[in-house]
Amino acid sequence: MEEQAFIGRQPIMDVKQQIIGYELFFRHSADAQSAVFEDNLKAYSSVLMNVMGEMDAQWLLGDKLAFINVNEMMLKSDFLELMPPKRTVLEILRSVTPDAVVVERCQTLRSQGYKISLDNPQLNAESLPLVQCADFIKIDIQSINAAEAAKFFNQFNAPSVKIIAEKIETVEQFEACKNIGFKLFQGFYFARPETFTAKVINPSFESVLNILNMVSQDADNKAIEAGFKRDAALSFKLLRYINSVGFGLSCEIQSIHHALTILGMKQLYRWLTLLMVTAGENTTPPALMKTSITRGRLAELLGESYFDKKDRDNLFIVGVFSLLDAILKMPMDKVLEKIQLPETVSEALLTREGIYGPFLQLTEACEDANSQRILELAELLQFDAIKVNECHISALAWVETMGV
Image (cartoon, one colour):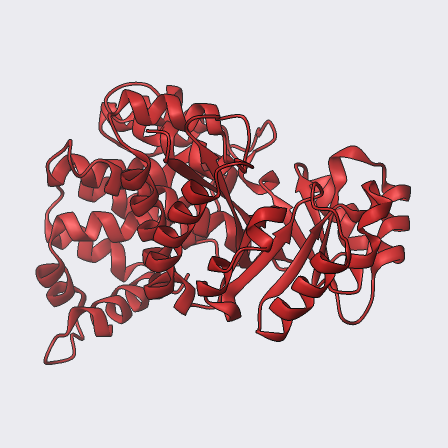
């Protein structure tokens, strides 16, 4: 087990809350408290190369950046250059002493197309020589007030560097940093709902919810078809989906009835699940939608060796719906009053318990880069790091293909 490391991730977003990249954390199973295991370059490089090999083929062909924490030993090693330069940002840890050799190495890596990120250089005056090499600079918002954030933003802001406000945990922090001038943000404030009291579902969700409930109660096709016909936008989305390249149909499907026949109830239910989180496109932050869909896919992949197709579909629904409280701005118990879901799915969403609970907990732990929880849950489910990491990267890759 000692050469295993689990990946955690946090999204990095722009002002419109579109995800531009992820910081990937590597938690070593032999020392779960430290994100980078300083003395074991072999283990770290092995994990990184496996992951990067997988990502290069799939996810990194997309337009997202991978921010990778780099210590001094890694920085000076050759294997960094095996990673794809256009999509890799090397985040230099504060423990790195920026002597002439380190500065020169960063300049060399930049000339090869890699980007350099600095983690809170204001906390270490010695790191200032590296500021000239930086493409990104991170400022930890949790440790300072708004005036200090503005001061550091102005100190480091330059045309050649992008400043990232990290550890954003509330909407207020996000808005304050936007006002200061930050253009990039890291954190999970959008996935940590405040105490919601809203009782009304946005009209754009209402039609989806009604049809979702009809499908879950085995209504006949005529009733479901009538539900679609009451909502032109929803009908359009269904026909666009069924005629998409993914289906590879030889003729265009023009009627709702024909679409429902081809799709089948199980596939329709799954599609409506996705639609539930993307229906409020104008109000739901894109990062929130993408995170919920990633959760669904990751939970489903983790369940492959445990469950049959029906249960894996339920895991997908559990993952996708686990952020419905934040999406609908409504407490989860109130959300579940409006959707007829299997009891096992509702139990996982409300309490994180039951047969699906541990799989949802593991997806959330990966998201938080919560090393201790990842290890506990992986051991509980008898997964090794390779399995969890493969599922994690595959889930991110799959969501990139969805175009949400």
